[in-house]
Image (cartoon, one colour):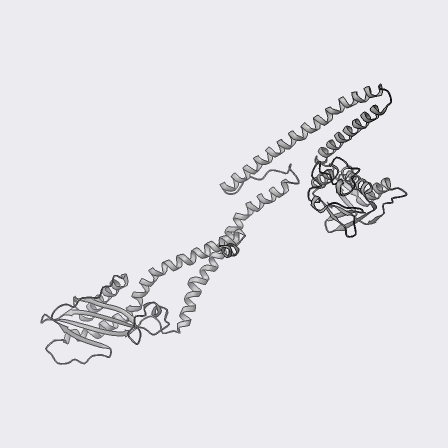
Length: 455
């Protein structure tokens, strides 16, 4: 079963082609029995008429008490007092041969004959039946007929004659190649063309549905699918649109709830700050002030994360100036941030992209050293690389560190760390712009973070 699964095509076109071609061949093989019955009678047509023409004079002159008649080659005559028992043969072709023999003798004798077909078969030179092979012409076949007619004296005359098959005298391989070409090859080509047309017509709405599903991850507010095509496709598109609306409602409800809670939390925090100012300046007051500041920072990052996925205000921005200005603001005398490369103008939300660069540079400066930035334009995209020399991120955390509230400071710095939303905000902003965020550890230590923006 394993090898069968490996041979089974993975694409819809391959599967449909295999099913249709296999089904066509199976139907063709099953219908060959009908063709064989018809061809069996056609092969016998010329020999039967020839045997009837040569047997008519023998029947008219025959008498069991007369002298020996001059017989054609490969013919035998026998007289019997009773009708010999015929050979059991239920093939439909036998009935056609018997009817043809009756008609031919009637034409040759000029009267209605009483004919009983005893045996009919195709034989080779040695007298062995070669029915199937003879039909394909691989060996020279002979039509062997044995029939009985009544004589005037009450006896039965049995005539046993042989004639060459009446199909074709062409080369056997020429006949086979012509048959395979016209019956199988052309039919398979036609099936392949039909498969190609059917698959294209069927895959067009499926591909459109797949593209919409892929785009749904980056743009939940994309236009709904058009309700056209077959009923099944319309039902799938309608179900997809309904799912999209439910997802939008769920995300909006969740975002609204988080935004409302985060915003309302700042009101009691403000009252706590005011009451804190009335307390004596001691260690307890200092710790409370730090706790309030941490809560306020966390609320601010949650709001930033929610705003990162909102509709962007896209406008042409010189990415080189934006990167240089942000690096200049965060660089110090001890830790300069050199900038290399050229990216040009891109259509982005300047404030959102600035927030991305700020989060990446702050992380690099906090956890590592020797921070540098490079910008490059690759086709329709601009790449901004932020590199540093530090402990990097543990390999098992690279796939999950961009998830909300997942922090990687254990692999970088045990004493510090944010709330696990910085990289989540960056990835959310990149996704809303149709871009991407990629990270990998550098050889020799350090991390390389790349943001990819479409031009």
